[in-house]
Amino acid sequence: MLAIRRLEKSFVLRRGGAAVRVLAGIDLEIGDGEFFCLLGASGCGKTTLLNILAGFETASAGALLLDGVPITRAGRDRVVFFQNADAALFPWLTAEENVGFGLRIQGLDRARRAPVVERFLKLVGLWDDRQKFPRQLSGGMKQRIQIARALAIDPAILLMDEPFAALDAITRRLMHTELLRIWAATGKTVVFVTHDVSEALVLADRVGVMTRGPNAGLKAVLPIPLPRPRDPGNPRFGETFARVEALLLPEAQSG
Image (cartoon, rainbow, N blue to C red; front, top):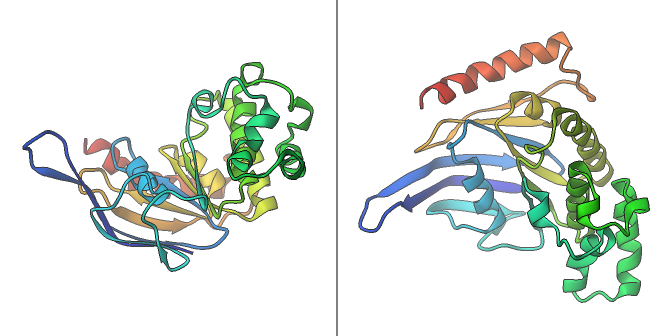
């Protein structure tokens, strides 16, 4: 579904300076309906790669294809989730209005928006809170509103940039369960950026471990052959954690 071919990205950090290559030769294929986690230390270029997938930035070299069609700009087939749900939601709109915002921009009238909004608010468990404003919702509820708003416009891919990093540990774990439930119900392709090994192993079908930047690449792509739901206390989970951490630690320590 999503093919990345020898992708590179360089930035000129200051006027007159030399270009710095941030990403070097990324090769990756992500299948339809797959939950893929990009795992790496801070500064390795995870978010840069996600922004290129979203169409917010252009690659310096290489190819990026979605169902065989080059990605050259942002589009409705890809939706990005950010850490800060407060910044992502419109504070003057209710939960219901936030979820329907993308449909309204597409030109759907209220009668056609209403059943779609109801469906996805019910899917994320927030139908009874539909008249609340973002300030009246918890952090986890705001992230679920982001998810419902994205699903309402029916994208092919959900691009998630550490969306739960600002949540407390208990809420974060509950959101993992919710996200997996929603993913199973919708069959969407998910690309999820994180620096947390446990989070990646709880969520992903496969994990891509990135090398440290600059010149960052994919050090390894590992399938996670653990049945869901995944218990971090399970010995097999611990063995997989140790294997992934052994790949990641040298990259984190090299800086």
